[in-house]
Length: 450
Image 1 (cartoon, rainbow, N blue to C red):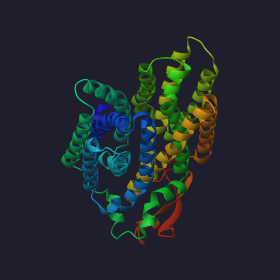
Image 2: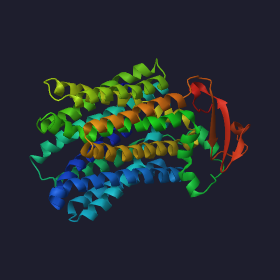
Image 3: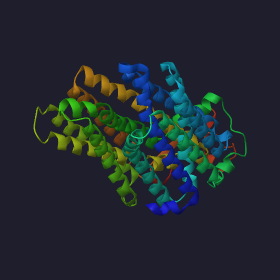
Image 4: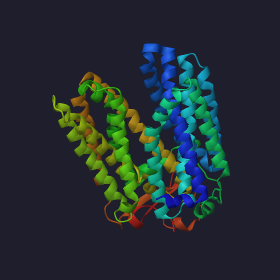
């Protein structure tokens, strides 16, 4: 898997991603301590609101970025986002009002909503070979999981030597280093197909461009399936993120340190699957892997329901660790191949819009499931939370199976925006709003240009 790092451009971009993730992890720890200093016992509500603001920024800003991405050099957009994040992080130690935290968090996460989809859409151009791109997706999944384990440990070690305000400087350094690595990377020019497609200025209103990626998701069957797969993953990850502390401290009566162990089990399961997937995806289709992952989540919810209903027993703690690891592995089965699916489903001229739509729509699911997991667990009890979220996961998995065509030769109806009217690919297309609509069979039932 590490052979893909021989590509200098990807190596620099991957290093930028890892360093920025570590900086973000340090900021997460420091923000919790800052909230406690400002709000005291109400720090939890401050952090909860900050998390909601983060999700709202992701949902609203990513599509807007997709609308203007074709007008800006990708390097400029990514470096500008990193510099914005560094500036915001530099301001955080000086705030003394809750509203200031909310404003800065919105700016910080808006910049992240600009950086991440642009980064995701760039990697297929840097690594055009399917095998290399699959390895890159697994490395990216590993980076996210390692960050969730490594950053809190690093923050704890640093806090034994310095005050938490200095952690924000680590975040600033991380974003500046990320910007420097993006600048140093030799990025490919726009793909040939996209160059051909842009011989004319792209038409359409700002709203049309901002919603182009979302409309693509609703037009292509595989991407419609991905919409509901995102909901299944969000239901499972919300259960782990929101209710881990309740299971460990309240249900099992264990210490605070065991909360980290439970979250580590989730990350460990995800990492193990991410390591194995490149070889699996060389033999098994994305459809099979992702749908199996979604349906596996339902089985894990059943196991969690059994654990939740059990009143006592010495095996409940090991069982929770196994269930959390299984959640992580099943989520990774769905999430890791997602980039391959989006890349194959979107024409080159819409790739950034498609990744921006995936970023926005997936976080819309989390915006729904995070409060649902917390509210149900607190008011109706954990058993009801498991039942409702498990039912959502089962329904999402079954709908995805129905939406995703199983035949490789299934014709796919889809829409293009940005192609000139005499483009050879539009020979059988009809006008549809600001774009062109047609259908044809493509490998894997996915959209691809020759």
